Amino acid sequence: MPGTRRRLLFIVNESAFFLSHRAEIAAAAAAQGFEVHVATPPGPGSEQVRARGFAHHPIAMTRSGTGLAGEWRAFRSIQRVIAKVRPDIVHLVTMKPVIYGGIAARLARVPGVVAAIAGLGHLFGQGAERRAQRALVAPLFRLALGGEAVRVIFQNDEDRRRLIAFAGLSAANAVLIRGSGVRVAEFPVAAEPDSTPAVVFASRLIWPKGVAEFVEAARRLRGRGVNARFRLAGDIDPQNPRSLHEGDVEHLRREGAVEVLGHVRDIPALFAAAHIVVLPSYYGEGLPTVLLEAAAAGRPVVTTDHPGCRDAIEPDVTGLLVPPRDAARLADAIESLLRDAQRRQAMGRAARALAEREFGIERVVERHLEIYRALGGGDG
Image 1 (cartoon, helix red, strand yellow):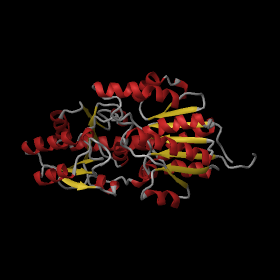
Image 2: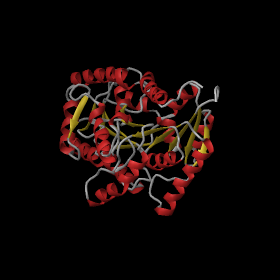
Image 3: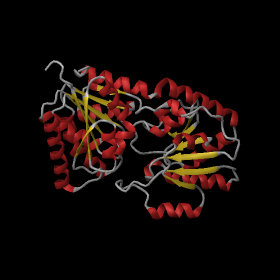
């Protein structure tokens, strides 16, 4: 009907992730005339979603597996929300919402579907178990992402190529947007602190993010007499089977090779006090936000030659690449930057320029609005 506000429904596996990675897009869509709804599992972030002015709908979903009965409940709860909201566009974020929400949206004949693939996680890992999982989910991906009124957003080109082949996705419907964006202005351009150099790892504390490699690199560099502080910032992730446990964190704290900071809210301050940011990940990354934030802070990074990580830097210009799972090469790369302040600072300046050019939240938001418009969404 003329004058009716078009409805946009986000389906995400966690309120906190929506708030940190998609709320800016939702706010811009609301300003463009959309009535915005958000479906996530219930939790502390639900009230914050409502406080941002969005309608919130609880869904029965967990990030980890719950068995067939639990997964069926998750699918049915998504179906019920879609039937209630009757959206013009659904925006699905993370794997379970993409699969379950994509199928439910197709069955409900939702006019437009946006699916965000922020990394492939462990799905494309090595081994017989992962191959069996891929064989099981391939038909679900094809069902969820079929149709012309679907746009699938990828954060790096390797994920895009893999899923086009894996899910029979139309290349025309596969869109590349580099990351979730960062508020560059919130990261002041600050000179390096005139103090003992600080090397910072900031991420969820799951092993595939390269926690063990970072700690081992710190041990090696301390053994060489390198004068630096190695700081580990982040929380454990109880819903991820590859997470460190409290005992692991306590062991690292007692050993003392790295400073264990726990969760850090003020990332701009953390990076302003750093000289180098490190993410030795071999996880199924999209485009790690921490690397975008490091660039915005004007800090060089050392990361892995791995999909997503390598896409977030300009190698040898804004940072260095090392092989995944190679603590020795990681230590060498960190040491090379610690010993060359001129090169390190030049990389930091280039990183800030890259963030301003490519990673600003405004650019990412506008790309999403363009997709909504292409699917028939616009001013109400």
